[in-house]
Image (cartoon, rainbow, N blue to C red; front, side, top):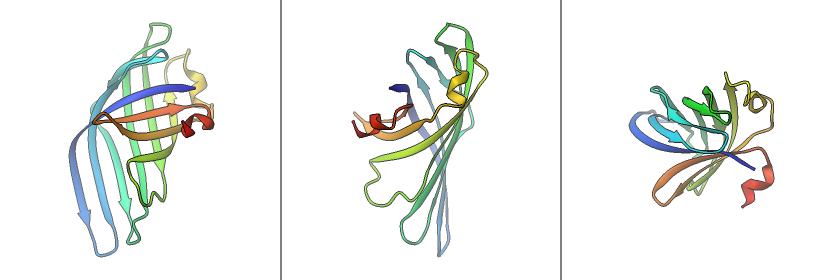
Amino acid sequence: MKLLEIVVRCREEIVVKSNRQIAKMILFDGYCKGDLFSGDILPGGVDTQITDGKGNIHLSARYALQGVDDTGLPATLFIENEAWSVVGDKSEIITKPTIITDSSSLKWLETDELYGRIMMVNGRLLIRIYNNKKELAK
């Protein structure tokens, strides 16, 4: 089941290159609208990407969203989304998200097995989070 769909807007990119690696910090904002949660990414969202000499990438995005949960109460989500060794086609990336929340209704997200996908859809960068690995194949 698709739990969250987050629209990401990249704002600034900081790049450091060495003769062995490339490090990028991509600052971003955006929003999430859905049945479980709706809200905005708070200032400070960053995607860190380390690329080695072979083209392998380690992604680690960290950000917080503030909005309302499925009961209509105020809620905040902290999300860390990681992916490793992404080689070749970068148009779709499978990730391993972790969520921390102050919402009693959404506490189960902290312990559930979550899966993520980063993709471009109609010119927009989307992060989709699922609790069923089979959903990634769709």
